Image (tube, rainbow, N blue to C red):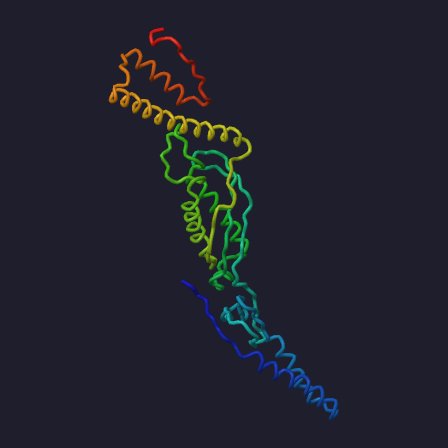
Length: 286
């Protein structure tokens, strides 16, 4: 529950006019009439001076009186408050935070390097000022903790030989991972009155000590998957060729010649290089 109180103090321009009258009027009248009594207005003006507060757009001032929270000024402009108030400035603007690249372990224990980009702003000045010691430092530490927590929940990639059946991985499911990261950060930073506007993974890679091995592993997995597709297509094409030959009765093939034809077609279709044909100038039997 928020304890923030938004207040609109006295108009600063009216008090500025009063300050000029008291300060300058006291000096002028004091020297004009050579009487110390008008200087009392100058002293009162000096007492009023610390009460002026300027609030810029998307800025705020948190007011305290001897340790007691009075309220927060969020309206921009020139205002005047009790000169005894302590006025703390808190920006309400959106801010970017690019975290450091952290070395963490994913769900499978593989070391990875990961960082995040966070867009945030203060939504509750009372929580930001009093519920945490330093809300900016709090954002940095909790962001790093959230990234470590997120990395431990998902594998970097999905490899069949590890027996994984994960729909979400850090590498291939960036949208889902970013949503989970934003939810995790929102829960952690809400205690400090911080609103998470956007969060996403800024950098993701294997750690240097396993990067080369994992790259070879990814390449091998891709090659195996590609070969699997090629074999499926080749078998389908061979089957279609034999069916068409039989259907149109172009040539009659016994089982031995059919096996030889299948073998030749599979070599041609599955080879990673162009096949070099050998033309038989004799008969089928020689």
